[in-house]
Image (cartoon, rainbow, N blue to C red; front, side, top):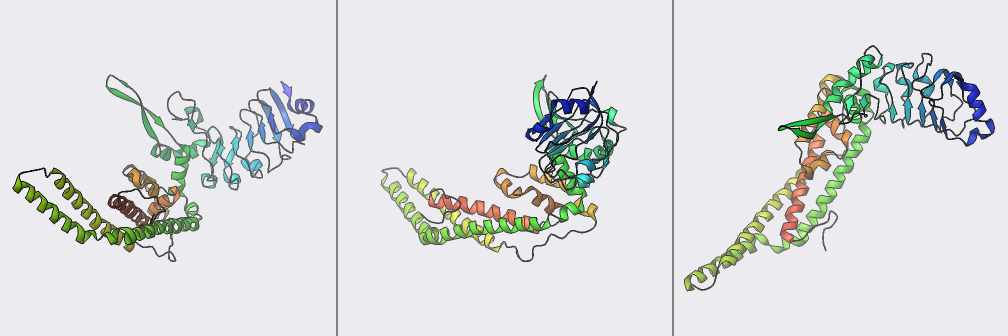
Length: 396
């Protein structure tokens, strides 16, 4: 065993410490107390797999450090407060020595991962930054698929309490994929997604998490509605300038009448073929039908409105009434959604989550219906004009 402080002082003289960005002290059999001083530009600290009993990294630059790995040591019991000032931390890896709440991490807005699994961290899931996508409960070393990694050896650890909160949501957001077929039976691997599980938990359990997003969500609704209305305006211009002047309602019936007369004449004289005339009549009827449908969709789209000055996503206080089952409903609706409208349904993941969670479908439904009308209007316009329209075009 090697004295940790002695080896660091020996291998990293103070005059070179400012130049070091990555300090890897892992697997060196280091023991005892370690104080890190002078590493003012350090970004990555790895002290894993040693026998350290204490470590002081308070001297590190709080804006520089991005990764800290302290797993598999002999550290005395402590909480997560030691990380709270490192505002740009991306990854934290700790072990059973750490206990208590996740609250000290609530202001680490860039944090991407922290290993909760296998620790005694037992509370404060509501304080976990929304940027966190990984908590260590997913085992990525599995040969096939991803498995939940909360083994029986962890059952008495504090992290079991957090795992119990998330377990339902791991299952809810999981998906299966066929691996191979044996004797006509398919073998499926189950995949879990921590990011989605954490999001689902927040949606259904944290009132404050929803409240602080309302203003941004209102802006999303307004922005998307403005965008769709501008698309509708351009399509209305195309209709008024290029389609309406064709006078299809009056012209097509007259053309059909003329083609029918030609067919009668051909049958009477017994010369020539009328097949092409039948095809023309069929195409004319289709175009007339498209024109009538286009008028209906345009009128329907004009009637779809949102009072942008009165948009309010009001949150009731009974969170169980509001949000329990919201994510399940979202998943069911997404499974039935067509690809054509998926962009609008998922234009912002949180928007749709909260629309469901609040039982307020008015704005969301209006946007979806307007999007559906615009898709149909553009399709019919293209068929009538016989050319493809770009989203921003109204005339050539």
